[in-house]
Picture (cartoon, rainbow, N blue to C red):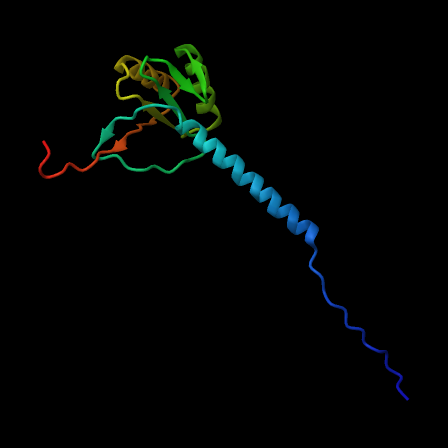
Length: 144
């Protein structure tokens, strides 16, 4: 006669609802981040070339300021005047101390607008300012 209980073996199941939630939220996060990073750098600007150009890493609080060929200043797909840009840069410097600004100027843009953007950065106490450029194509041996 057996007095012990019969052990019932139950197969353990994986909870799918939390797994699906995590995968979905991760997907939404990466889609949002990739849309934001490409939005600022896809404006139709012909960048100048430089032999010392190198890819940069994005940081928090970093903003791209685009100077078009006709001198218009574009930030986050919105045209801005110099006073509007100054207000935005003041807020960025306040919220993200040590943040950086990358100026993407068209190769045919007037230098005066780039200097005005640099002046706005200086007035907002943003010291980490850089210019965006493409890497130069290596010249062929026979070409001049």
